Length: 221
Image 1 (cartoon, rainbow, N blue to C red):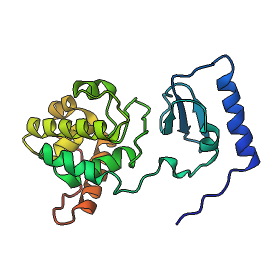
Image 2 (image 1 turned 90 degrees about the vertical axis):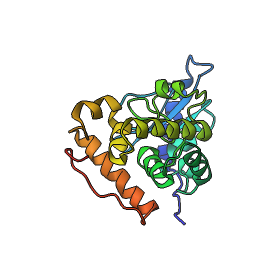
Image 3 (image 1 turned 135 degrees about the vertical axis):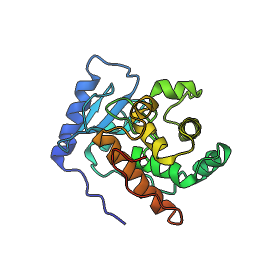
């Protein structure tokens, strides 16, 4: 079991300094975001950040407890074991006839099993759904594991029907959008998407070694 080192006095001071800035003139916040920044620091803010390579640690209703969370770099508050959501994944994978291992692999690649994850593009939750896409599937609380997983798997079902049940194209479309996959008639030549597809395939093979999909390139189908 990994030991978590207690925050230093300097870390606590920085965290509470940030909290003080947030609280001045802001008696009631709609939400508090704790971010890991690209330089390794941790920031507390009352609104989502559009910073490349930043990662939301947690979204909280108010500042209570946010200072401690900001100071603990490896806090277990947002880390979940890979098996945490297996029951929900199986439930919706069966309901929408989508492979369990693929759903879990995409969740792993998207959020590392953090239901509070928010990307710099605004995608949210376990399977990093954009709010407008989630709304199309009736999601009211995008950070709810049940709602998020249900909508994401239903969206995967739609992508399978759209791309003739070809898993690699479905994975690419989940990352880059169905329009890009249609435009290039295959995996778009975006390095991010190629890397994403291969990462998902790696995880899928890990979760279901009896059915292996292999690495692809931008021209792969």
